[in-house]
Image: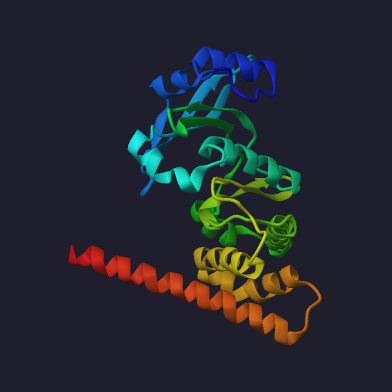
Length: 273
């Protein structure tokens, strides 16, 4: 099976060279750095460092989904009829986010392998994005940024979230770990990653938008929240009345508080062994 998408000749060569131009090759691949993460199940994320045409290092990420057993596919069959494979779905989500004008990774290739029932396994290859996750670098940025840089960052962050939601999309994992900050000479530039769970909001838009906003508020440093959240929420909502603004604020805070309670319960259970 040939990959479904190859944007450049160089990327096609690198795919073939690494054996990532077939599903079997993607699952046989043994190089790169395996990135562990809780609750991935049969999924794997691997960081690849390849050599480009001009001898420069090229960083890609390989995501492998599966294999899923026949019994599992049979159990999921009523819920999966007509649905794309996880790799195809994430590929399509990347395209939707790009169409919304949001900077993100570039999809290189994906493939899926049908089983006797449903998709047995699939894979996706994407580029890296510049910068670092806010989860890792934002505290340092807060210490070092001047007023103008902070204003630029806030404007970029609200623009990202507004673009996402105005396109009818919810990220569903909009934490600081999934927003990358690249500190360029022209100001902060933001990238959105981890798009596997992106949802097209046909119904219950308020619920999904509040969830995204709460995840963002919950995961950003308390100092930024104290100094900038009210401006951020007002800019996000635009020209609405005070009553509507309070409704959104209460809903976001209730969701963020629920996240904190869950985190405290998990920490308590971990201490008890």
